Length: 297
Ligand code: GLU
Picture 1: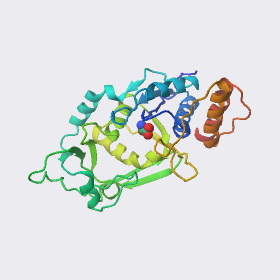
Picture 2: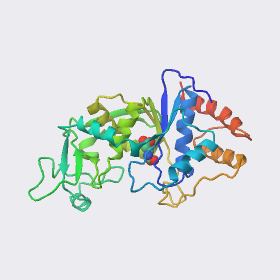
Picture 3: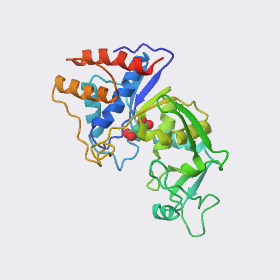
Picture 4: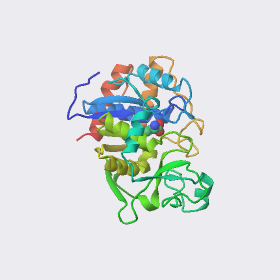
């Protein structure tokens, strides 16, 4: 595969190994891979196994094996978040002054009825912002977002266009270290994208609403903000996002024809015209320019 670098493009696919890849996560993998290849860039795989409670043993290896069989290999060594806790700890230390211990549990936050953030998390009412109430012990560590008025984050998504979020009312102060002791996805993803020099994030639109929080963290940590392209999520016949919880089937092609069929399905969902391709090599030869025609200047 072509790994010539043009303009220093670095992209990545960052699966959480909570199960095997399904048709939805494959779409995100294919989109990020095609964007990197269309830009003659570097493509990385990062295993987001920071939430060890949700990680399924063997799932990461199965994902890596499938990607390899589909022709998608990381251009650099695969990074595993579970091995990088010291790096998240060091980043967290740089945020001193912006974080505070929080003693609230989920029920208390939900009971405050401030509503839910677009990703479904209850918006934090700020109870512990100015100190833990007497008798409470810290559970999580939370990042303070600016007051309303100074809290607007705007960015240009390559597909969705201009996206604006008011952090104070639409997200609230968010968790960086969870009550179970794990570093939160929002911190780990920002630290890793920066350290790996990621210039372009291509991922599912279910993460569009997390992006303003990540941009806010990038600014606090003084690291660059990548370009973003959020591709539509695949839904089942009930309109639910494909996921392990909604019973999505694993992609497990038996042979090259099956691999091509899985890739053609992902490409079709992404609106790419690849024609009658019979081998993996033919698929990628057709899909890269098809992607470039839609998404590259
Ligand atoms: N690990 C996340 C997931 O599997 C993706 C994170 C990202 O692409 O930023 O949903």
